[in-house]
Amino acid sequence: MICTDKTGTLTTNQMTVQTLWYNNHHYTVTGNGYEPYGTILDEKQKKVVDSEFFELFISVGVLASNAHIRAEDETHPHRWVIGDPTE
Image (cartoon, rainbow, N blue to C red; front, side):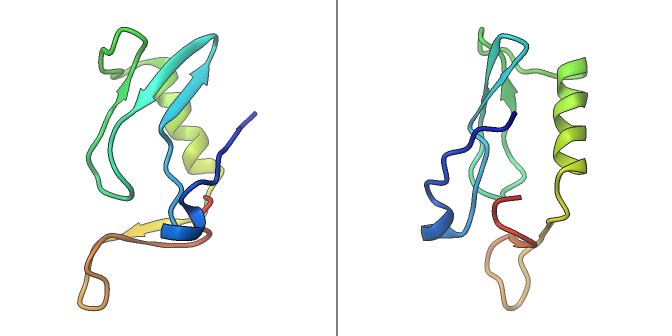
């Protein structure tokens, strides 16, 4: 199940993940917008790396979306997305 709050989708045309709930555990996602910086932190604020959860999370995101993030270019001063902003 994916529960979302669409705050920001209309004003900035972006939807970014900030928190996750998986297998009775809460995770925090850091970073801002489409920038390639940030991490997933567990309940103890430790970085989640190379775990079954991390692999599952990334796989679900890739399989559930056909959107692509593009680097800034001469017409886009920031990273930008091709596809539905809710993906």
